[in-house]
Amino acid sequence: MNENQIKKRILVTGGAGFLGSHLCEELLRQGHEVICLDNYFTGDKANVEHLMDNHYFELVRHDVIVPYFIEVDEIYNLACPASPVHYQYNPIKTTKTSVMGAINMLGLAKRIKAKILQASTSEVYGDPAIHPQPESYWGNVNPTGIRSCYDEGKRCAETLFFDYHRQNNVHIKVVRIFNTYGPRMHPNDGRVVSNFIMQALKGQDITIYGDGSQTRSFCYCDDMIRGLIAMMNTDNSVIGPVNIGNPTEFTIRQLAEMVIDLVGSKSKICYLPLPSDDPMQRQPVITQARELLGWQPTVALREGLAKTIDYFERFR
Ligand code: NAD
Ligand code: UDP
Image 1 (tube, rainbow, N blue to C red):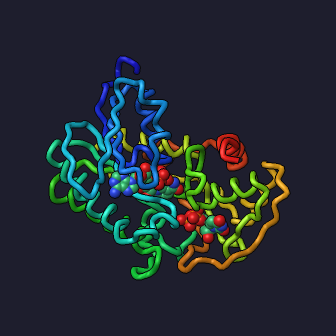
Image 2 (image 1 turned 30 degrees about the vertical axis):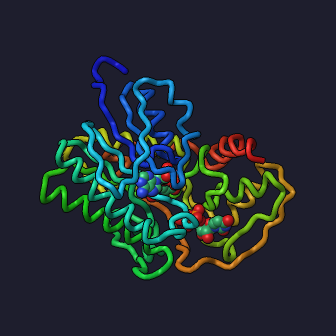
Image 3 (image 1 turned 90 degrees about the vertical axis):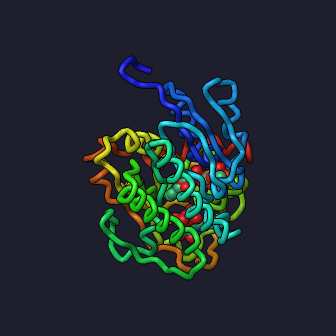
């Protein structure tokens, strides 16, 4: 920590998950004290095992749908399953996690006057009718479909953040995260990058849902963590929502071919039905992130995939 920086106490909900664990690690590296709160639904203690020896790291088993009391300077609210397979497993719980979790963390932030960042999502844009997606776009979301528990839960959480800000002057920061991948994704997570890498490593068929022409824009986790921290460190006038993601767009078929090539796999591609409400295209406009945060992604998909494949080798 350089002498101009202040050591902060920081709560990270969902801290034992994929992104949360990288965030805890980076905040500790910057010299802060970190309290990691998780119910281990999709997270794992193994993701933060290497941080346990650090005296400034605390791990707490807790569910964000239950109020939690602590004194901290900042809260990063990441608790919520992110993979469609997992958030659809218990959809009512997913909505509770997003909405009651937001209420509990915002209530805490209000009482202790902490800054609070919400990990929102590109899913608030639904199956977007505007391409690429700027923050000003209100989205095209099915309120009653199988993805709604996540999409509408996250939309309601954004509403709560802005109402706590307007009504109670809570210092909020809302970021909309676009598809992010990297080491520590769960091998059975069900998201496309982990599925394709595990299938390629095991020589199994690569399961493309639909015809593979749908697009996503993939951001490497290290870039994302830099973006989240940059957003938290902006002055109080910046509240968001701000898109954070890599604007380079790929079809799912291109992703499959790149993974097969990088792994050197003999896997064949097979085509399965497209799940309902699966968005056809997604690409962030990141002008705000560039201008307000001085942020832009630096890791190209090929480079990030190679690092992720290295990590997944242990599960082969
Ligand atoms: P993840 O599933 O690995 O992490 C989520 C973490 O939250 C897990 O550790 C899980 O155990 C924990 N959790 C879930 N419900 C909880 C509850 N009720 N109480 C306490 N902890 C709970 O997913 P991730 O990719 O690391 O996502 C982190 C956050 O970022 C999520 O809020 C997600 O919606 C958001 N996000 C991620 C992406 C992405 O592509 N990775 C994209 C958009 C938004
Ligand atoms: N997908 C796929 N095969 C898989 C997993 C996902 O073709 O084994 C597709 C999925 O239908 C979607 C895209 O990949 O079009 C991204 O899916 P993911 O679950 O990673 O994230 P999200 O749909 O939430 O962006």
